[in-house]
Image 1 (cartoon, one colour):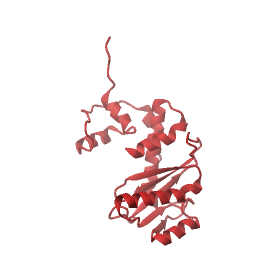
Image 2 (cartoon, one colour; image 1 turned 90 degrees about the vertical axis):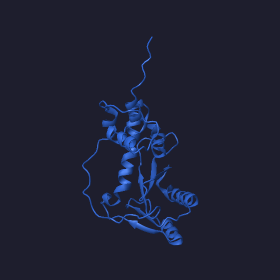
Image 3 (cartoon, helix red, strand yellow; image 1 turned 30 degrees about the vertical axis):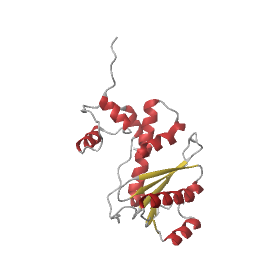
Image 4 (cartoon, helix red, strand yellow; image 1 turned 60 degrees about the vertical axis):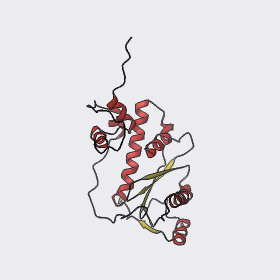
Amino acid sequence: MVVKGADETKLWHLRYGHLNIKGLKLLQQIEMVCGLPKLGSLNLCESRIYGKQSKKPFPVGNSWRAACNHELILADLYGPIKTESYGGSRYFMLLTDDYSHMSWVYFLQKKSEAFEAFKKFKSLLETQSGKHVKALRTNRGGEVTPQEFYSFFDEHGIRRELTAPYTPEKNGVAERKNRTVVEMARSMLQEKGLRNQFWREAIATQCMC
């Protein structure tokens, strides 16, 4: 009997949330990941096509960008998601550092839990890094507009930035980050034939990569 191992290029493609071959070779080129084997070609991946279909991109515009870590945090709330996760979540809030593009995710059962999630995030970030959050940019979806947020921002000297209505491109990094993790999670669930209730675990896995 002969045991045939799985194609290593496809295996790493799956491990990185269905990352394309160009992205994998870039990781190998800059030596960002240790142990990457010699990569070959990649066959058509139906799960990637299913999970990463998209519209045309927004036109490129000018916006203020952070010059150091934690100077500007970009936040976006995704949901309500039709399928409730096994943990009871229907929303997730993704917070991204504009300078490093590092992200943190918080899963919520209700939209009103966004305030408590942000307080936990602020405490974690400032305790671990010793730097303070200076500004928070969101759209006008309602997650950062309640009075409790405004009072908290005033108390801690955080500048709040709200994008103009119907202009998600003004918070493009957060919007694209949301799209990226959702597409990766969708592709992972499709590839392994898992139920949609596992979306929370799939997104958490991507944010830990």
